[in-house]
Image (cartoon, rainbow, N blue to C red; front, side):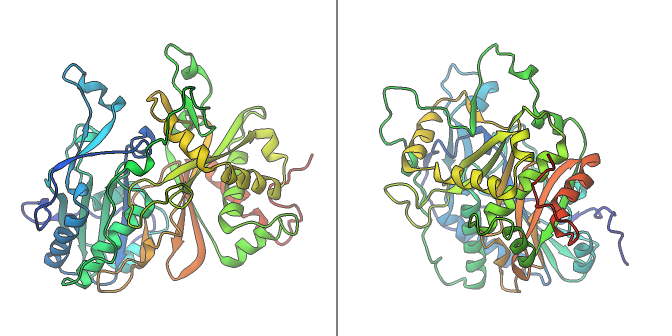
Length: 459
């Protein structure tokens, strides 16, 4: 049976007594694990949800067994989040409190299901996530974010013998590098059950403590803003609120290595740039143009920068917690759309260079203030998944035919393209009426008749 590209997924049929809790296979340390200021940001109080499609299934028993074993090494993922509340604190304000992990070995949630669909039928609709994909991840009945287990997994067997593995991993415990490390270690123990994982995960978060808090308040980094009590900030215009006020539709565009070289050609010889720098600049420019914003509005591009090798002392191998900060490029709408691509790339490069060791320490110190939050008012946030090795996950029956997010949001993802390691898929959600406009600006440079450099507007 062929399925329409717009057809929703059929319902999942869950096995009896689902889900189950998978506990570590041997005793693990029982203690409270304090999170760093990077882990503890409100911006990260959600779960990273991955979806993997495999041609062939792996037995559920083997997946459970290897998960139980890998949770011995990654025992915080079998624990539960708690707040540092005093007896007089109101639980309703837990969102403002410092987080920690109760490493109690309670276990990860694991659900088994089947679905009346084939691998090929899913591939037909895999280009853009839709709401029906949420069926592929067991919905835990949790009152708040804090009540949800840090790790939730669902394995769905398909009619053709394939399987979909969907994972939800709490972002306060792991970043993209950390989630990839955990998933690969789980897969490693599935294929080599008598071995130990190659690198032991490093749990302690003290590596990102502020070195020596200064007597003066640190400068507010441009990626952040501060809540001011009784302010009228809610009355000011917010692109973020504007986007969320209407139904969002995912835009998905794939760029080949030759497409990216064509973008880079607009910058050389004036400036040399990486693939990320040029594609992020181009995406930011296209996003801002599609929104038709006021020329004087300040807009920002926020993107994650791995700082494991940027701080002293160096972060140990196996560190799977959050080891990134947000770099920030900013300018006005007018300054951006009237610029050319290589000038926008310069803004991105300057944002990367600004993240010195001293700057990172200042951010860590600044985040002690719980009134500080990531500035999403008029910001495009880009997260790069295309260089994490996520697409190489192999549980013993081959690498995935598809990998990506379970859902799409206004955060922009740079995704790997299976079988084409130098290609990148850009995924971001916009109001339905703006998607075609965004796609036009994103693809205009591919028109051989278009002599205008991407990002250059007629004056």
